[in-house]
Image (cartoon, rainbow over all chains, first blue to last red):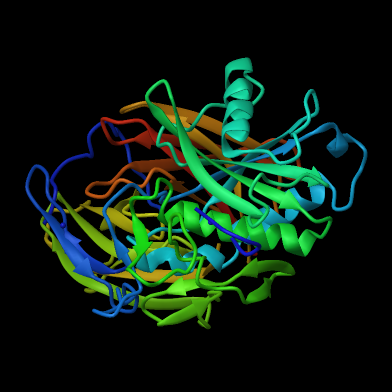
Length: 363
Length: 84
């Protein structure tokens, strides 16, 4: 809930199930994975999971649901959105896309591995207007009507959708102390997560409020996940990671609000770490037996970096191809990928190889 | 390097589906990767293969076959990286 302005591995022989062919292709640890024979796991050599904070954490996990990869759906409510207001819906949408693709949400990794979201879509609903002094219930009734009418899509299969209703200027909430809020209602047994945002006519203000609600809804969509310990917040309602921070920063030209980081012990607007690209290395060394295959997995690679894989035999043996490999991906959490790499030995001798990575850059 | 998401989609359990994306300059070196957006730890979720069609002298079409390796539906995004 948000308040005031700044709110809310071993080896596998044989193919992978269902996959018939393989051709050559494309952090954390490495482990050989498991299946028919063996699978190995490999510990990352350079990527580390962020510190989870300490005993003095302001915000603790109450184990309720979180949104690992948010799908933001913006709903512009009211006829005013058809009259080319300032800022326009297109400007707000563009700014939100920029924010979601930025480093902003990468700092949520300390909260159960939550990662960046993306813009699922937008809708302008001009067939009705939001009432002044609107309530949460009026907003949820509006959303529910749109879902029933099919003017907005239903929640995605993982229920990671946050419906965010952006009001026109001049429309306030019934609680004038709030300029934005996120909460949920239940529709046919499913939780519909939504937020509403008031509009002062300033793009910076709108994106600040949206950023606040986005990080809070990701870490606590239903008031049962990451919440402040007693005494953390001064206001009523859900005490969430945006509620104790008010500073803002511009990320790629978009104003966002800071949020609390337990590991940093303060309010943060995360930036991507400074890293050199491309960056190459050997993640692990393995051996595949003659005419067989092995499977390894390597974990805790940030989803926001692009990694290519290459399996290189270590002993010269001219005259024939020795190895091919196949990469599969697991989204272990919003922020982290696990690469599952199956290596096929094409010859009648054991082959030792290096599992080499190349981090090409940020995505 | 220029990166982006070309398309997003959903695969039913154990489904294999092919997509194509066209009008990519033949002189560009484009790498493709398919990343699940359904966070589900414990096992590989998707793999993919890329095939190429030379549609005309200047452009290519990429045909991307994506496989859901799990017994649950998986949402994903197809990411490109133009490396040169």
